[in-house]
Image (cartoon, rainbow, N blue to C red):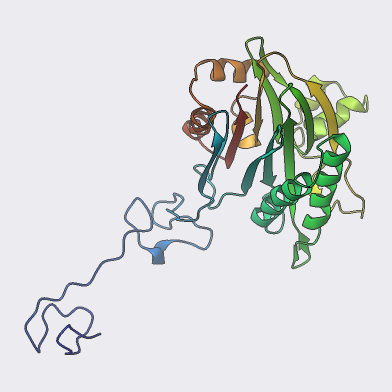
Length: 307
């Protein structure tokens, strides 16, 4: 290193031997709130000194989208994860507003890429024409086949996805695979419009167990039964797609399980949203903040269409 006068100096020197100028070397900012430097941050993104998730400047750690005061989304890495494996997109196609949320399956290969690919593929597919049930089903299957190509060390990518396309009349086409959820929110309350693709629901649908009995199996109850990406047997998962006529002034919330795990029942979410007000963006911020205040154990994403 050289001083402004051209004289060479070594790290740790306080003064230049050529001109006598005091040398000040910038100290890099700490990588963790506890003061630890980057050398003390493990490959998993957590601090070896205090155990907390280190600071990151990755743009996906906290992302906000606002297309209008009535259409917005927020996605956040949460308190425990080293990176955000959720992704979200919003778009307006003619008179139709579209909300798309994807959650990468953490145990799969590169879930961050899988969730991003799911959202982008669905978005691109729906931008090309009228959005009806057939178009939504095709878009989700395109995302599935795209994610199947994410491979490394014998592993594959995987993600869930949920989307809602709502026109000006209140007619909605919704589609999903996995356990990212779609809710209707109105003065009449909160209703879950999607139904999780989970082990517990599969057992109930097959008549194998009652909901109460299946719920006692804590290890499997909420395990995914369908997802985007390799199913292990070469098959393609069947997306759930349906049309819904929304209630008067009924809004739409699409979210990852990082949010609804802290308010799993419709009544829980109804009480929570009943305490909130503001634009769609402000509501999303409050929902994400709620999840983080409860522990933020997972990435959390909320997309809201206010009607």
